Image (cartoon, rainbow, N blue to C red; front, side, top):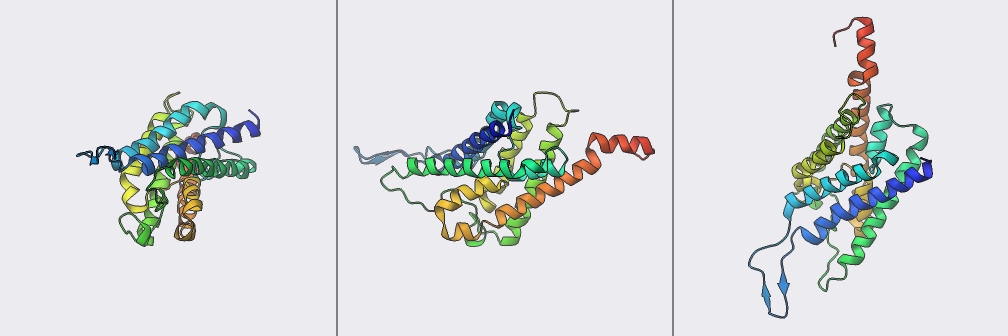
Length: 254
């Protein structure tokens, strides 16, 4: 596939991740049926809640991994592209095109989500699924707590991706652990940061919220990319096939 084709796949994939994942949070997380004609509210909330949003993010990644994995690798995340580069799985020359496609795909996802959500009479932009720390963390977690959470969770996420896509791993199953791991990551960290582990996912809603979301966006680029870099370097140096082969050659313990 040409670079243009692969970047288009990344654009579409990141669009789906943001539209599907953030859309579930904005449109469905706390939904309560409201029959204005009868003047009644449903006695039970119909929203999908934290668990539903977590599953939505995992499912968007899993479905796109099977859809565009064979085309672009389905990074749909600048941190993943950087981590794969650090792990010697992706060329540096393609980082900027991939990241650009991912960011613009995410922005389109948020744009269409905004057009849909703003059609509700009582719509308020509010958080719009943006990531934040301190007063803008769902659980009011500090900057340090949020930084650690994003760094560690992205680190583990990249280790899972690198291992699941290793040629020694069972063929055809990689999207399953990768998608499930993203769902688990959201179950852990939605209360902390609203869960990023993906700078493109964070940038897209922040541009619509503006103000504090733009001011805090730096953390959701820095922490995920640093975590991804560390994971890529570790996997390449310790767990990769070439590293194991070198230890066998030199007689070091495996």
